Amino acid sequence: MSEHTCPHGGQSMAPELGARPRHSGLVVPYISPHHRTGRPAFGIVDGPPLRRCLADGLCGVCGGRLGGEVIVLARAADLRAGRVIEPGLHPGCFDYTRAACPMVSGAMDTHHKHPDRRRCTDRSCWCHGRGAEDGVAARAGQAAPAWYAVRLPRDNYRTVPHSPTQPGVMLNEHILDHAHAVRAVRPPHLADQPQVLHLLFGLVSLATLTDAAAEWTTRRKTKAARRIPAWLHNRGDLLAIPDLPGTAARFSHLARQIVAASDLDGGITLLGWHFCQRPHDGCPHATGRANTSGG
Image 1 (cartoon, rainbow, N blue to C red):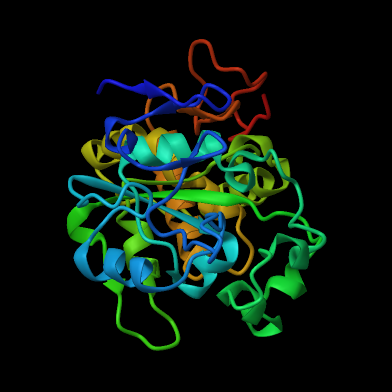
Image 2: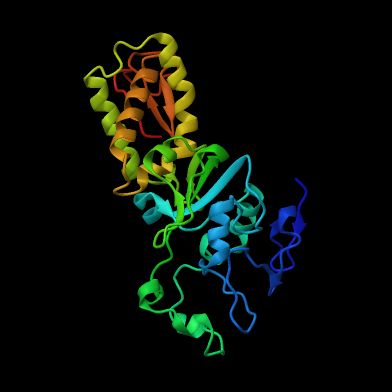
């Protein structure tokens, strides 16, 4: 895919964004409302464009029709709730957003401390009617949330466009488990969170003691060994989100998969940890008896 260059900061843009208007060098997202003064309200998601995107399957940044893979940006709170208000994006539009949006990129580490100052000068504008019910005042000065990129096949992209109170994109447990990937937009990722890894690998030790995969065939164990690294890379960040529905089942399922793979000749090494159930050439364990080793 060819790209253009944004004059503000050099962020690359997908061709879909070439026709979008700009303000201070930044692309104005399709869903962004405008003040009565004409200035775009970056970061505000509301109004008819939002509902059009959700109803017609349009990208929230360029306004073009979505197809193939759709990327949905969500916070941990959205994933726990199983719904996010912002519509999905084309992969190229996501790449631009990840680089250009200060909240997503990490350029801003807190919400605006004085949101009232973002109002325009026209007292009749909608921005002067936004209050505590919008949650803006409650978030003022608070730490910016971590963002996750949920990559979905178009067929699994489900929206609720006509809800009077909760329009948005559905991100329930089933959808997350069948996504192409769910990864934090910025570090830390699972590999950088030792507490989560120790919990996972402690469950592996327990599953080994209970022979959780004793009846698995060699073919099934080999398939598990191929799948685990991709799962950890593409969905492992889900394990680090507190109180996320389905997390206990994900831990348990992954632990059984690792136990099965560790029973293969040579075991398996994941994120710097080695798992094996018998001595073998090149084993990092001194005795070959332990089944986990921190790298």
